[in-house]
Image 1 (cartoon, helix red, strand yellow):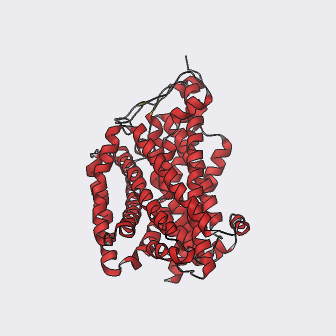
Image 2 (tube, rainbow, N blue to C red):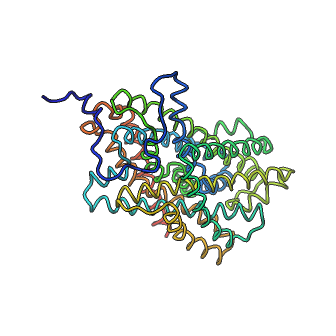
Length: 447
């Protein structure tokens, strides 16, 4: 007798190899009874681990460059990118919960090796580009706050591997709580900065309306692609499909559907907070630098030193550097977890978190040290923006497989994504591909 479709969807996917992130897999209990808020609290946490990647130092470089050069115009890109991210992360939560597999595992199991291995390589490039932005941002923050020379700060960032080990040993709930606390502090820092910079709120609101110049102006488009790459980050798609499985939920269709709903609410709230922080960086840059005629501020260090004289207080600059350091540390944690998911999922090859972190960071340190040695702080801004454009170029190789799995009713059954999400998801993928192609064409013509 053929089981009904609902029963098929309720059955857990056959496990091929170990579960994703085995240290935390199904480690957080979900109450069977209780009200809406109690259950939502049980599912809150993974969204904030993901949101950290949407406010890392790479976002700072693109937001500073965009705000100082073009005022509030690129706020529309920040908003659009965040809406794309909210949709894509909700789809990640769906396939992670519905299949019991992360995106890397699904790619390995359902694509032939000539497809899955290049996808793994692209994912690793994206993680290295992310790590490059994080180590540069953290090193700059150490220099601004403590006077540590930039090149030594770059090398010191390799020690954060031990922070990762300590956090993972404490458990995923402790990790989520620390990340959330840092995000609240970052938000508080920028709330004060916006109050001090006193932006024109009418112009801010108009900035969220898309302008044709974003596409027609080659420089705006390049920075816009950097904002997109810094916001919708490829490694976060892999990470989210794994961390949602840390909840010990029921395996029947009803329980999974409920888990998808709560996980989507969690990520939506977290990414909305990330949007506010990213907007705050761009608004601060526009109100502080663009309006004062400083339209070429792309370096984080330059922004720090200009803030005190322009705003009349050193508090804004100090809070700016503290927020940058917190963002760098936060993003370090999630990038390491994402690297673990990608390597184990695609290759079934496991490294300890510390060793994985050291390998990735050493790869990223090489270009950072070379650029810092040759150009000093003047070269770090362009390297940061370039790293985010590279991330944008890697996006299609994560988004397209995600959409294929999320819309596959033959495998997800009753838990497949609704039609409106599928349509919007494929439209998002198409926009990303088209914009990437335009950037490449513009670069080729410019060359």
